[in-house]
Amino acid sequence: MNAERIRWGQAHGAAHRRRVYRTADALEVDEAGGFEIVRRRVFFTEIRLVTLHRARPGAAVWVLAALAGIALLAGLVSGRSGIPAYVLYGVTGLSAFGAMVSSAPVWVVTAHGRRTRAELRFRLRQARAEQVYGELCHLVGEAQSALAARLAEEEPRRPDPLAGITGIPAPPSPAIEPA
Image (cartoon, rainbow, N blue to C red):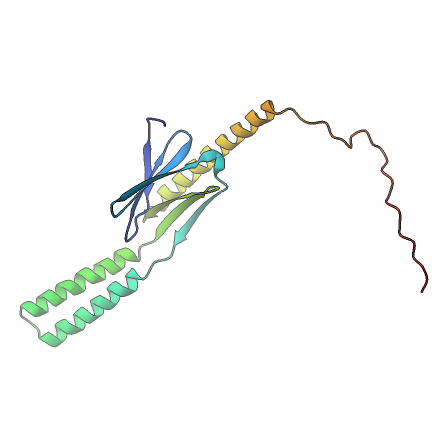
């Protein structure tokens, strides 16, 4: 295992935390969920597809917006002043702010390997996502071309069995009998 790991990004969810590191020959994904920590590697030589796309906002936007609306209505019903109204207005403001943050654009870089994949998410950082995408494509291209060159040197070309044959006769046509 290489000693140098560079933190490249993250992809957090509701129940897990993922951090993605770049090493000399792979991407390492450390996933912590509950009491379990798992480390996966996606080697640059095994990557088949690298994508960059914008993620759609999830249900959190609608849930927080609905909560803000309900809290605002409850605050208006409870009266103009008083502690309950101020608490409900505070909940309204925080929920509306959460909905705005949840609806912010998220750029996703995904590296699909043979058996695993690594996903990096960048909220409001399109330039950084494009930079990571370019670096990842460059690293994958270098690793795979080096592997192809090494395999070409190790394995000599087999002679083509059909190279000496100049004219291959056509297969015989079946005889058609009249009905």
